[in-house]
Image (cartoon, rainbow over all chains, first blue to last red; front, side, top):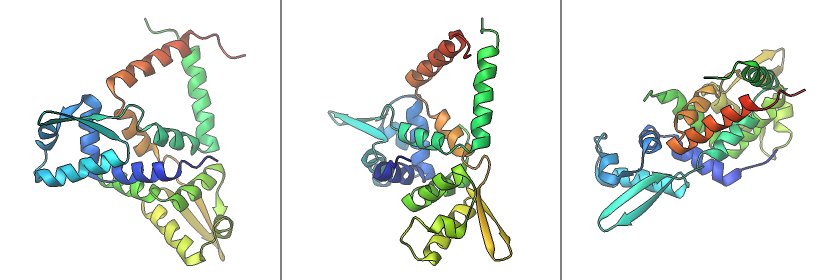
Length: 112
Length: 112
């Protein structure tokens, strides 16, 4: 079994916080500047910046500074390592259900 | 956006450790007794039991004691909350790629 090791450790730790997950949820919709990301939280800006740093260190987000404005984006494929690992942990019964689902999708009439 | 809150926090924190992920990987193959789970690790049994407790508290595994033997299983669907959350974080570009994938699966000749 492959061991995605340190990368998975840091991605999982980064996501194990509701504020950081809420930031990821916002960024999944579109990139945002730091003040937009801060708006929904009753949190001092330095605390939010700290959360962003954890997400960036884990490779979940990237950011770019233009003038005085920092724009944060979800790094494409950032969560793939976790998605992949999760897929590998399907139990035999779940895999059987997956195969049935694929069979049914293939047998279904095409969407029009 | 739905907030799976505390459940996700504890599942993510439980998985953010390589020993606990290795245990999940073993249990995805089949349930195992504690001594089998301990075998690959050079770790005192109480430390492994502590890891198992974190996984059980997070609802990732369940265990049953028969006589002196404790058997640990992956809880079916335990990782679904995380799978679901990850799916929700697909960016618009990734969603488009997903739809293309479904279209190609449906258009493909059936497996024989």
